[in-house]
Length: 161
Image (cartoon, rainbow, N blue to C red):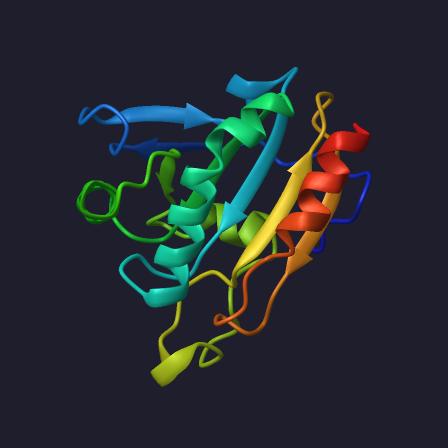
């Protein structure tokens, strides 16, 4: 799917375990009326993904002050995500798209053979800002997994909403 700025963000429900230790369902629609930063990352325990999630976790207060929540979607299992979060102090919700349905909906899935070592079924590092009405106001999908989203631009968009 090729989502555009102004499109309604597709709703989804994914499992998470890292915040409570219990398996819970988190839906995008749970946050209707809030600004959302939706991050997609390739794989847990990789260098750039760990840097990204730790940096965003450390900036929790900043995002909160902008009336925004941050959710991170990856294809790892809830058990892998929980261990990764505990080991690295990641405090934002990590959502498991183990079945790769949401990365398909958002158009972030690498084409087959497009990720390192020919690994298939992972997401490109991506960022979406979704407004209080559920519309996409910022979209960034990176082909280079070693790059981080433009967090300054994300903050600028959040401030403008």
